[in-house]
Image (cartoon, rainbow, N blue to C red; front, side, top):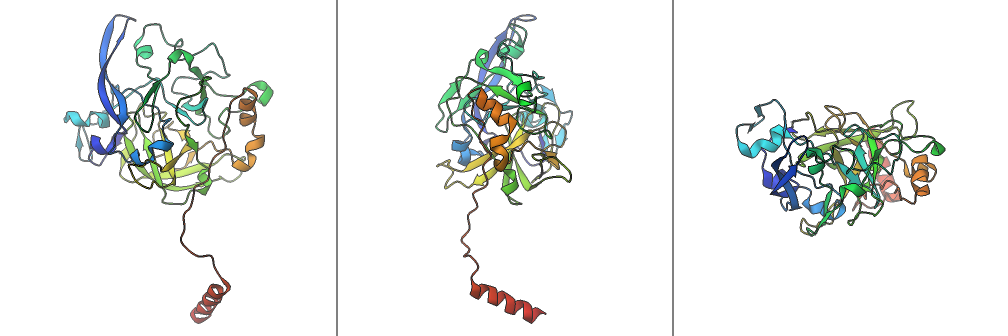
Length: 349
């Protein structure tokens, strides 16, 4: 993602990286040095929330997709430090786990299956010995930097809809947002899952962040969630806007955004809570400007939602979205306060 403000790795990178060589044999033997995440970046804007986002995917930085721009804002492509601004990473894996066994994955990123198929995994859907296979890193990093890698052969390939017995409806729960598929890891991840946000409860101006293809952290302004006229229940949209000018380009697809549900006590504590917005980037302006259709199962409909019932039938947990935790020091209105307001209005009249 192109960013107009000065890119500073110590501030904008979610992870710390190390060089790592991957090798492949198809169509011919070769190798490349990629950037592999190994720890949280303590200067990142998301570091104070890391305990709530330990299921954030930690993928390679490949940086082979050029934006075509040689200057954007104050950044120059000629400066090697700025490569993560001008080059995107096409990483096969972009799964965001919102339960121990279920994750959200961009549907068009890997062309998902229609139905759940246990025979398809991230280990057998690419050519054997290919670069795609070698560059699929499914990794989680705990809040205290313990690394958990998952065998790509044990991760079920993304699927779009529930079984016909549950109506063949969208597996992530909304007819209005078809670009999120479900990935499944039957063994269960080793870190706490992400929290789904009830975006209807999030006030204007709440802190909102996107992570792009290179897992640069981009701060957004949350502008609200609404139900479009005549839209079916669950067909909500959100509006966000970039705090600073940003521009998405090829292979930012699958990027996702978060809103602050409760603030951290300190950066070191890492106890702030971020909620996952139910949409991945599909088009050029998704989540950077609005409106963007999202998948949201209202908590009041959760118990009867086919997508939820389907996962329960498989022994999986599909959790309900969580509202924001508003904090206020204001006292509730009293009769005295009401009379004061009435008197003031009378004076104004």
